[in-house]
Amino acid sequence: MIYHRWGGLGSHRYQIGFSGDTFATWKVLGYLPWFTATASNVGYGYWGHDIGGHQQPSGVHETDPELYTRWLQGGVFTPIYKTHSTKDLTMEKRFWVFPDYFDAMRDAIRLRYSLSPYIYGAARQAYDTGISMCRPLYYYYPENDEAYEYKEEFMFGDDILATVVCSPVDKETGLAPRKMWFPEGNDWYDAATGALYRGGTVAELLYRVEENPWFVRAGAVIPMASEKIKSLQEKSDVLNLFVAPGEGVAEVRVYEDDGETQAYADEFATTLVRKEAFGSSVKLTVAPREGSYRGISSVRALRVTLDGVFAPVSVRVNGVEVPYSRTAEHDCGEDVSLTAWTYKGADVAAVVYLAERDASEEVVMEVELPEGDRSLLDGAKGLIRRCMTLTPDVKYHYARYVGGNVPLPPDFVAVAQSCSYLTEDPVHAAEYISRWNPSGLENELRSRGSLPEDFVVRTLSALKLQN
Image 1 (spheres, rainbow, N blue to C red):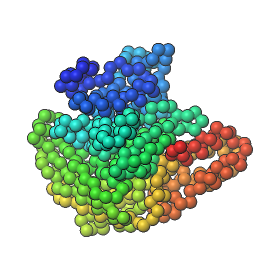
Image 2 (image 1 turned 90 degrees about the horizontal axis):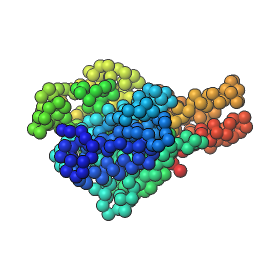
Image 3 (image 1 turned 120 degrees about the vertical axis):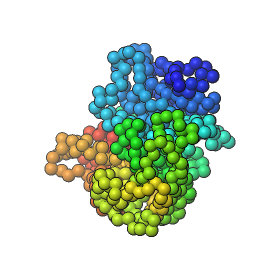
Image 4 (image 1 turned 60 degrees about the vertical axis):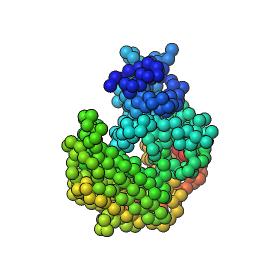
């Protein structure tokens, strides 16, 4: 295997290429999705790019941390994830140098690690079929003109619609636009904000710099790594499954091999996961593992995240009731012999922790969700996280311009503290969310004539997920 520059058609027999001495510009960042996906047409599926750009354009002498952040976010959905640049002190790639962007940069890298089982499965699929993990939309929707026109989005594996935010945030609103076409045939779930978009539509979406949009086919199951993973060479006996909201039947086959040798040609294992969701019922069947490889563990624990749902009425595994626990994330993370479920308010998600068991055992999980208005959850995750992020700014401006003894606007607090409300009292999640009143917040902020206009605009804009 050779990692090299583009050498023309035929050089991809060595598989791993990088796109050369790119300039660090928004235009180049916006070009890379089309470039990477189109390379799949000639079987050149393993492209890497110098994340953040290789060199500065003429006249630029410092790294733009926002551009670098977006490059790290978009790079999550490329075959090769790496930073690199020419020997230029103005091309700064150490993300801890940018404290205001540090969390967003680190979150992008963490997401890449979390998605490693999904990416590894797509790599195996490429080995077996020749279809690369980055795929133009016209592979799936050849009759749609949009599949050719929207060049800044592509399919990343079977179930993720990937894109990149390739323009800076507006200085007044703190939001950057991302126009998306959502292919018909199913809906698409924005894992960054929790919004569900109907297939066959176009939307002008808005993102803060810490938000990295990636869209999951509604109802799909995405295999993910343990939250504690720090190296792709680590072996994990935890199978994490991320389940996007959406009705119908979905299947995924989770792939494993030894991760070290070329024995994968014949020595590997797969696990079929089937999800059936109709009405308020979700059934997830994890079949016995098939196959084997050197060093395989005979046991595994399961973690199932049901994203964008209200707290379950009941959870049963192989016919046995699973207890609710407020502290399940901590307790089950430390002790794999425990089984419980919990609710994470910041994610608006139910998480089921199943104790370690023999991988040859079939696991059937049945979840009964409450009847209710599902539309209340549409984008709730994004609004909660945005208001949590803005809380220090709101506190500062109220203390300075309104008065230290004046409480924060109730309609802001209702959203910003929903994380705690939902986590502590998940049964009443719908009630808490239904109290949100953006118009009341606008009236409150506008009535305070002492508040700076830029602060008011920035705060109210955060409540908008699209134009």
